Image: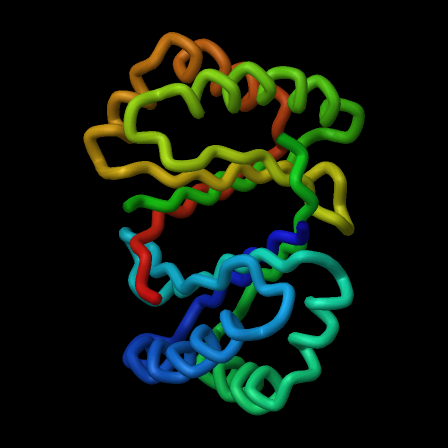
Length: 94
Length: 94
């Protein structure tokens, strides 16, 4: 299992637009083979922080995900709405 | 549901000691009322990054957690092993 935390710091006023884009990305990603979970979260204290937390069965599923039409189209659009982002790819320890 | 991502940047050589401490914290936290999930992850590219990803039923369960003997005892000990940490408390959006 691979866990991903993709944290985005969005420009003020662009959060709703981002959530709209995430709606399609979340829905289509969940339907992909090897996707265990794929959720969008918003920071309780700073609503310009939107974070996707994903779980994939393995590297192969993750690579396929990165080459899907929806990933290739939507992820750059999200990038345009963000000030910066942090991506951590994790292994489960405990 | 409340999701927490607690990311720690640990000093070189202190990672195993931290994992040892997390073993008790993870095991006891999972047994608490209102704990949906409580897992420890390690960054695939930088093994000095250890991140706990937790899910709690609500604020009350989270407050009780912060007042448990194991939390009060272990969390400061982890703090001594870290360079810095980032804590995000999230609401589920999608």
